[in-house]
Amino acid sequence: MTLQAVVDKLKAKFASSVLDEREFRGEMTVTVTKEEIVAVCTFLRDELGFNFLTDICAVDSLGESPRFMVVYQLYNIGEHLRFRVKAPVEEADATIDTVSCVWTTANWLERECWDLMGITFNNHPDPRRILMPADWEGHPLRKDYPVQGPDREPYQGRVR
Image 1 (tube, one colour):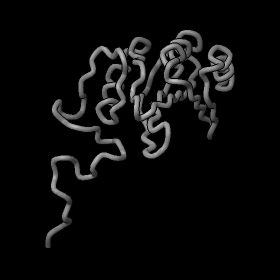
Image 2: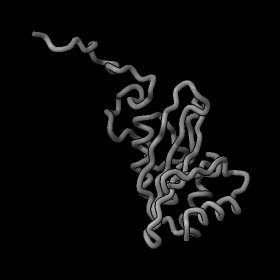
Image 3: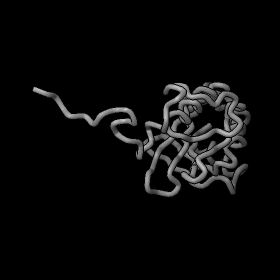
Image 4: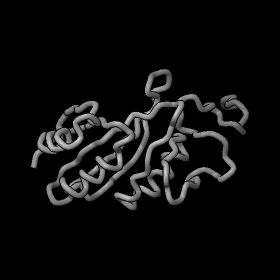
């Protein structure tokens, strides 16, 4: 199976949900609506063999719409194929459904994404912070997060 065949099958099944497809340097990325992310991921796992979720992250495009893009890195172990799925998320509704029902490893990856970027994963089984203290305010990887953090004095440089 080729990456283009994966895209073709995905577009045939989810024609109205596939927003974009890009191939760059041998890597394939498909952007889908956030409302269909669970169905798309289930199809990729069950029908196309992407049985390993290697990572979930988010990209902050401050000042643009949509502000966030949730990115899923997938791997088909049998075919040795890598595939990327992205879903746009607006700042006003920074939520997307959890895919922990598709790949259990998404549990921790989504917690990290929420902790650092503030993307809420609907129906997540354990929505707690994973890297920052429980009482931490804000999401430190957002582009509008204070550079010095909420509890630090501005950096003054080295005193000689």
